[in-house]
Length: 208
Image (cartoon, rainbow, N blue to C red):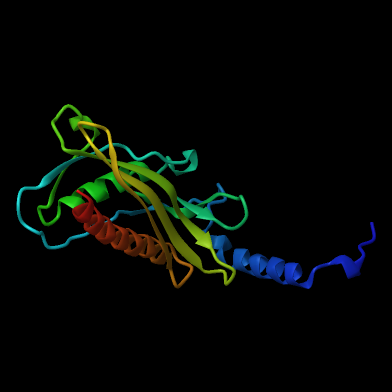
């Protein structure tokens, strides 16, 4: 079939070329199902901040809601478009929702302002419920071929007794890994989570 070159958009050709180059550069990072290298296991170090004093607020933190593709300990990679892949030779220390929950629990309790209860403690009395919907927790490949750790949460603070939503907010970070390596990607996720944890603590302190 002949292609009419007059109908080809030059900008579209340029973007396709950039995406192709990017995928070629990061191809070794993607899990093709034939990877025999042992996995490097990455964890998230909790965020630490000074406390504000006073009695801690009790918050129940359930398992975050999340898209099905995030319910794994594999590190999700989005090369472009609708495609979903996984990072080769690497995984999280737990499935992503559980990893995020524990990170937030320890980070929020740092400083003594909050006492966070997890799902197994649902029968204990608490003042607030923290509802978290994980919108994204994956490495996106940019037009330059370098990965970015994209973390996005939709968060609501709810009064436990009345189930009244006190406040809601979107938290989103896009952190460049700077290079095509699994260690750099994991470090970018750590920076993104730490920035969100700091903002989340300030928001909770102001909202309660």
